Image (tube, each protein chain N blue to C red):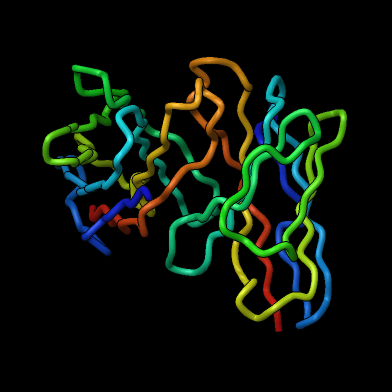
Length: 118
Length: 114
């Protein structure tokens, strides 16, 4: 069974500084995908970044980067130059990808509440 | 271009009642998934629909059922409501094609069971 662990219930960061949100995962699958989603108080889950298990380079999307360490089974999210609008819940998730692309089940962690201070 | 839309946004029911939640996928998407997010937890996968059939199911009892219509919209039905069914119910859509990795989520329907 797949499992996602986010050990930081809450994190604080000063505006314009960088912050790292931790995520470790457990799976016996060889092919899987790792995702980070942001959930503001409105409730909508907003996709941030994706990393495939066979991708050799760390994924980047604007101010977001994913620090993927396969041997350690970690997929930490790095947000550079934090903004006040980054304050939200952040969820790490994974999906098994052996089914020819037909698996749509994501397994989520419990999330980290990020607060950006001015 | 509208994203995933869900209705109603909030509703209150009592134990034993039945509820129906609705979801319209993003334009161009034909696969719909439903997730339950209890307070303080991450979302949990309920089931996924494609071509009007349930294709995958998570660890939820038969009280949870769904439907997908020819226009790809979907409903989630929960019968015999329990207090523990109180949660945010999220709908997500994606196009069913190779390489379509990302689920697009709606803002959810918040259900309170009294």
